[in-house]
Length: 365
Length: 100
Ligand SMILES: [Zn+2]
Ligand SMILES: [Zn+2]
Image (cartoon, rainbow over all chains, first blue to last red; front, side, top):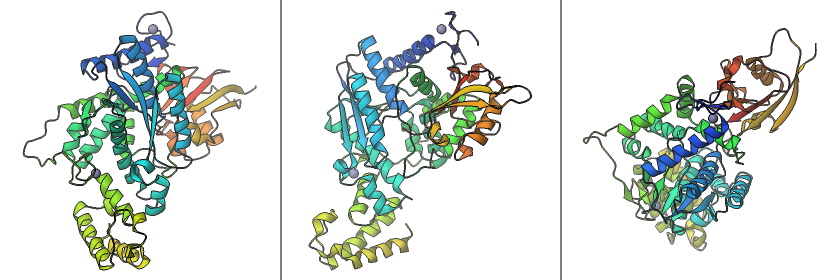
């Protein structure tokens, strides 16, 4: 077994992907924590006296983030108030265990915990959404709703920052995905360590330069309890092709992770390129690249009994909504957005629903 | 000749491929020559793995994204698949690919 590269005399337990150094447990802890401290101070991530919500899923990244932020806050006197913010998607048998893990974090790290449910925020649980849309598109709903749920939760908690556990591998993956999609607007934004979602509460990523391997090793050696599972609605999903490609490349040379992040950071978008501007959603006021944000469009579809509404192209969405409004007014519908408010009017009649589903089929959304 | 007694542990969701058992004591059958980690990985595929071998094995090693520890040390310090197993070794497989 090789000796620790720091010449402390102990045996190494880990080969660092970033540097190739072999470090002992103690030297690894110190290097790992100091690098995150350096990232936080160099980017001036937090103003002293602020309240920071840590987006906590019970998974490895957010568990390590909460642990290290607490440790650094005490060690270096950041003077931050840390709280945990969790989202309950309402998936029976999936979140139950991970929420237990988050509650364990709350007790272990002595941080207040706020759990917000999709039901509270949107009126629908994921179980209910899956019953409407089936299992093919449910990940779209879940992903879009989760992103905004954190923003809404941070707003309700009146915090100054929302810290997420995105690590270097996650960010490199997002850069790759945005390149593959040709999404230049996001490409530049996804590498920033601080992003503003339009509501004034900055999202920060203190683990931006931390390798996933080190996060998992850190949790293992610190004996941090975290939860890992597959979503029961997409058990074979694992991660997408970009992730697989990235892990294959990382095996050959771990430096590719940092290289991809740096490429994303230094890419300058040509001024003549067609860039969508970030605006706020007319309906909910949260950040969006469209007049109505994706979450509101998906919700509208669910509430109108047209669950696939938001999955297609936006031009088709407009057409469908117009058609739906026409049908509803012809049937004397109150046009309520919420189906349950609409018990007395004709819009709940099955024939209209059937007509609408047929219209959706014809448009091939 | 008697078999080789070792402990195998799983974490980070890798246990889901192995019948959700987090820890298993196994006796590797006696064979000619030494047991390397590569031999172990293929033995596990044939004897312990319950589902989806493509999520555990890729080419001649574990799938990239699965971390391996030998007696609580990174296997990258020990020549990875070429490491020669000894009695009472503890081998840990941790998936980094599962969500949380
Ligand atoms: Zn050392
Ligand atoms: Zn909206």
